[in-house]
Image (spheres, rainbow, N blue to C red):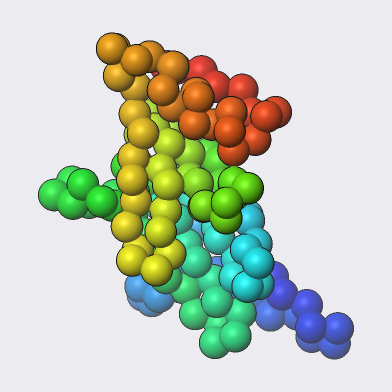
Length: 132
């Protein structure tokens, strides 16, 4: 990822020796109303705070049901109420609370197979939903 301030480019890359560096590769980018960049990667969700140029990582933790449901991020979006949503490959749809760092996961349920789709359609009417 690169930032241009009008004069200089700053490059942010993944550094194996620096756990606070950018996770890579980035496949989705969403800017929130505070100017924070949210980056969907194949290894989780990264938050880049441009004010202090730091990354915060959110990843799936098997023992934590409020963590990201899967590390492969395929969708980032906001709803009309300001909710932040993260779609994952095989892990369902996650509603993220930036204040607590917790996720609520909506996954496929045989009793209500269209539940993740109903939520997704409220986020973005152009989003097509498919189950694997």
